[in-house]
Amino acid sequence: MEYEVVIGLEIHLELQTQSKLFCSCSTSFGKEPNTNCCPVCLGLPGSLPVFNRKAIELAVTAALALNSSVQLNSRFDRKNYHYPDLPKAYQVSQYEKPIALGGCLELEIDDQVKKVNLERVHLEEEAGKLIHSGDSIIGSDYSKVDYNRAGIPLLEIVTKPDLCSGHEARLFLEELRMLLLYSGASDCKMEEGSLRCDANISLRPMGSKQLGTKAEVKNMNSFKAVEMALNYEAERQRQILISGGSVIQQTCHWDEEEKVTVPLRSKEGSSDYRYFPEPDLLPLLLEEKEVNIIKSVLPESPMDRRLRFQKEYGLAKSEASLFTSNRPLGEYFEIVALKYKDYSNLARWIQGDYLYQLREAGKSESALEPDKLVELLNLLDNGDINRPVAKELLAEMVRSGESPSRLVNEKGLKQISGHDMLLPLVEKVINENPDAVNNYLGGKEKALKFLIGQVMALSGGRADPGEVKKMLISKIAE
Image (cartoon, rainbow, N blue to C red):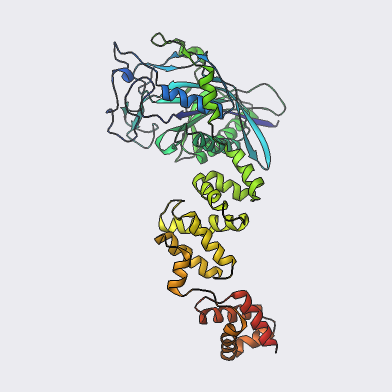
């Protein structure tokens, strides 16, 4: 029997606020353990929570970016469970009345657009962090608890079971991360835990509408790990089913070192958490005009940006994707494009030589003033310099910030062109390299490239290589 994979994701996103969801403790990363804590986020007796307005605004921003329906009336609940990283023995979350319902995210898979639907988007407080004595919880002798993270505003995004492979899950997360970065809701730093993902995965007979028994996979710390873990778990379940066994509903841990999923415990259901309304918080009431204001200032989505770059500038899909994924580079391209209209040539230079020189110099995408790049490209287009010189100048410009015209004058790099100026160089190279000339006459094209290189060397790299080639061919044929 053939089986199909069904995957739903639960993405946990730390919102980009300076203080926690219900108190004024700092959310800064990397502080000494248990120093960003207070009676509220530790749940000490007598402490009362207060809403963080900024967190609510960012939650609405993210929900709108995801095409979700923002609920003007939502509520917080207590999610009861005992775990060392939860100081109150319950988590303040949203269950029956989340801040947003529905929504979707579109992504491209093999040149096809796939819509991944969302179940809900809800706010909750972050738990603390367990620091294990070993590399992971498996095999560790003990664990310590850091409550600095406890109470940080967290947005949980729950998809419907619309994904069919680890690869699709990875593409979805990459697109989601970019969308959330564009919205400004989060910094999405997986290495700091501000974007995490759990996955529910099951198999069912091909064509069936009934979901199979699911396993939840945790501890996937990168998009690559998500893809590998889900592909492994899908195959594990497949082998159980084809051998006549039954999949057990459980929570699994992804062992990054061994590249396997390891069962941790039986999977809880919603009834196990004994949800009830949070008695210390009033319902969260939003005004429609406030939601509309946030909606009106939403930035362009990554997918809309990719399509616009292809339509407006005529760029290839790969170029549009680069300028979308690297947002500052795309913004730099658009500023330069206001004055330099050969968009294809501009894209080649920015994604090629310019980006390379930035990395070599350790500079940001806007290191070079846009007008200076325009000036350089105009010098090249007008024949004042050739491409090798332009590349040399660009490297110097990125390092020093100098204008290309000044560097050309200082270094004497203006292109040598015209018959009278090039003829002596061409004749000298032909006379000094008879073997290469004979090889070219014998049909060896590489010999011509060698001769062109010799002329370029004599000119200090300033000769027009196209004109040199024509003159060599003509002179050798005489």
